[in-house]
Image 1 (cartoon, helix red, strand yellow):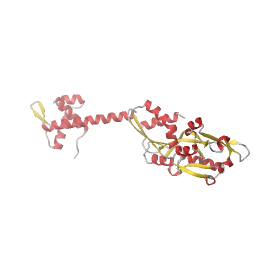
Image 2: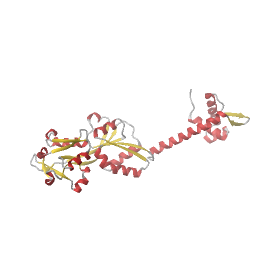
Image 3: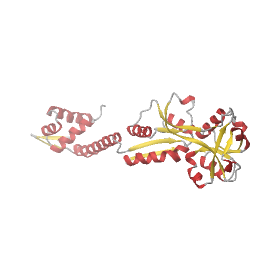
Image 4: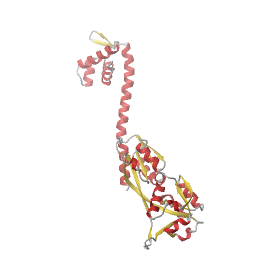
Length: 310
């Protein structure tokens, strides 16, 4: 069974409106035999009479009246669908699914989303926040169109995900007002093992970068007195602000607290070689996308906007 086609429905609607094969053919810019063949094919396929031939005139039959109503609904829906697809391509409508690690999503990304929405108000943006490992996995499985993380992509996913730097920030060692370092503001690397620490969970981009920095400074994480581990930078910040130890945290997260004086950044001095240089921790923000999945036009535009914000 071949089934009816959209072209047959368009021809039928034209004949039903004009009740004339030749006029229908002229409207559609096809030949009159092509019109007759389409109507005959429909009648043969379904064993019905769509039109009564009365002399040189035609009248629509009962089956034709039913098909006219339903065919018009189908063609109207096709028109709406085609318009929707064009609007998607023209960025008038659509959905962008983003996955972001917590620091980026809470402090860096909102202004970028606002800028994009001001230019393309019809686009819906859904942003999921999770740690770096979860965002990498979600981007690899197609849950997100784009991912944004501050941690490293694990080797197992590097063949699946394409990634590039779209921003950066610094990790700061911070303490609260009651901590002995608050007034010092400077310490040596060797003093890092002399205070309790509040850390982020394994899988956090912040934690990855802090552990890498410790190793570069010749310090193993096991040498630190880690007393609390949180899955949120806000929780770690609140604990330290209340006087519990020190933490390594994004400078984006503590701007307000530093301004209010409830937290203090601690300058770490690398004294291993006697140089006394600042031991700073810079970290890049990575944009992720799948290497093979189809990328929508709006995903490409958002990606381009992130790259121009560098």
